Image 1 (cartoon, rainbow, N blue to C red):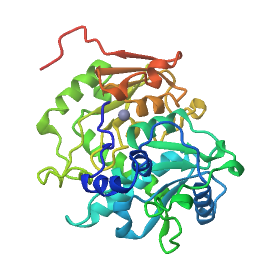
Image 2 (cartoon, protein in one colour):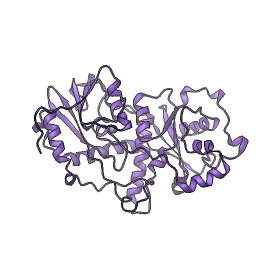
Image 3 (spheres, rainbow, N blue to C red):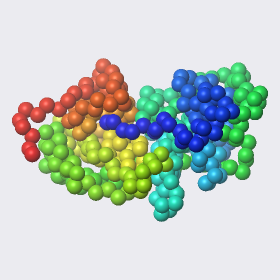
Length: 368
Ligand SMILES: [Zn+2]
């Protein structure tokens, strides 16, 4: 599905202030906007050491530095997440850092803005040696850039530019030990739980599963439920980049439903998009994130049926397609509406030779 990416622009005031004393390239780099791979610096490795020490875990850790506009609020230096049994550190960091912002914004009335997009504009580092297809797709849809520190030789890391020029240090001042390194791994778990609960409330607009034997029944029911007046969501706020006062208090979820269908059970699980408060919680994420990727565990509630087809009212974005392809049991994806946006092109579902993505073709006129 198409979603708004974290906006690329930076605030005018900031660009103006920075641009006077620094090259455009330095400004872009400071905001993590430079395209292409960037080799990690000595300071990146040093921060990784600090994060690893703070996390006190064998697991991989992923971290992102606090954005300048959020630093003054909570005295945070960086947020990090550990890998857990079913999720990578990068996935947990994106889910958790965003959820923490959602919670902070929800806990205050009006005064506290949600800086999730600012956080996710920073470069994410992971101590893992490689980055999975799903990690990369999730970064593309919900963050900006990611670097696997494990893929680089620390001994050859270059020194940071500020050592020579003294110009960059103020942007991400890692030396302030009073600022906290904040573990958001638990926030990621809470995001998943909250997403599922909110999704279940939205799915109450659908008939019971037994009443939806096939794709046609699901899409017909979803279309009915998707009427504008059918969804009432008051649990969403916009990010810090939307200056419109009218839109700045609430953002509703884009209405999308997803379902799992198998030959043996018909439609056996449904979920709704809840990305209004946490951009990572697309319908497919709510549908699949807490399930087992391997079908060896069939017969348990968290396993998919063999020969499952993923049904979605809007074609999968790159992130959700990559997630679906992590599941052995998903053999096909069928969408009701195509998404011609840039994030639904050449997705894992379209490239994977073992899976098929297709548009749903109704052979009879759909109910109005
Ligand atoms: Zn998606």
